[in-house]
Image 1 (tube, rainbow, N blue to C red):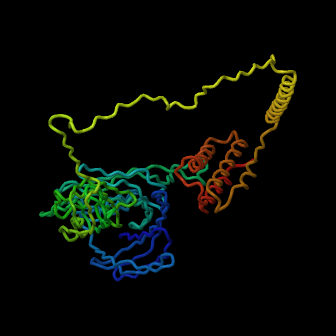
Image 2: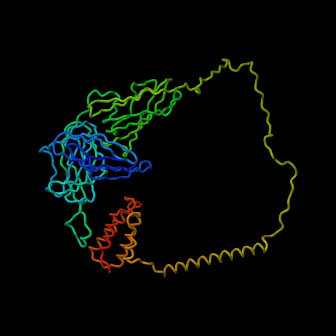
Image 3: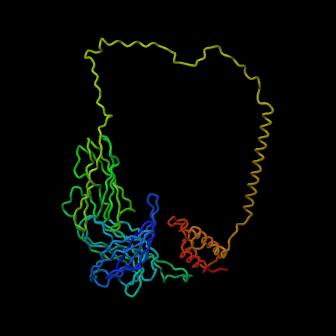
Length: 530
């Protein structure tokens, strides 16, 4: 049994329930949406999952099929699936255990630095038995592992029992060749603990953490093929690239920036910038290129990734073109090196006209030239000081008054009386308002009334969980002597509300789902009431 997943960004898609494939059964099994924010732009990505299985070993092809994406109809590409009989030494799903985990790689033989997708899957007996994934870890000193960020929930029949599963995808690449053993990996999940009921267990289910270890896998890492050209920059996969100069007209010694964009499927983290096809000593001066790779745009071995390089080059002589750049990578499917070429770019390089040769001035060997006239001795002049009065002064007698008059003091007294009167009224009103606040009791909503005020499906999650919190506080006031198990249940509900309202991990402004409304209102209605 395997999984096929299709990712659609920005728009919704209409998917077929079943894909008719000769020799395989391919059935739609669910979907999962996630929100990514890149440079302030929000993008919604939806992943659609299909489960496929075959009854006989062999090679089968899932044909192309149509998907309606928004207003357009697009087609997928055919996918080749190989079904084989399980080796007796291979770890199989064990239906005798209540929970177990499994490590799976897409292949066990690959090159150094080749990106290899893998999955850690936790299985727990029962439907909807897994609450969430607590942690996942896989370590090896000779491998680099991408962090575990995505979780897909699913289920399958194992033996005669149904198991819930949590699939944790990631990818890895090896740092050195040789034979290695990967695993065991460690997975911890939170599961519904049916045997740990307490108090009001009829409506509340406690969870418990289960830690599991996976199987191990022997892998063979091959060294890269011999004969790598000088333009090989470390990329492993299948790529394309473009080169764009910032300007095409410049002078000798002026810098120009070349922007490279590489797209494709494979290991972008070990790749460096394209290089000149032929060294340009004496013609172009180059600087080390900067590298930009966002996690959201990285390739995972299935989807296409994107990486950008920016390199500054400076012409040291007049030339008519920027020589072509080469990008060489190793294609593991072809088991050989592939070289991509950008092609020369026509430019105009002019001589810098501002760089003029210095003018030489010759002086006589015997000192100053006797024929040269002597400079005139400057004369002292003070006519640069202006606007100075030189006439006789005009005197003005001082004011004979001795100080402010009675009118001045009368105005000051009136203003002071008005100011203190206004201030006195303000202080009196503030004291009266404070007294009223102390005497006025705070209205408390009864629990039955608070329960009716809880919003319904479609209301903002912040408003819904705030109303649930108000109802819980009302119930606590009415039931101060409630049994400890009941209060523990109420505290857990209150903690979940606080997690949504104050933790910052959720999106409190999105509409509340029907499932959440049903879950919390059912719990509150079952609380004992007076």
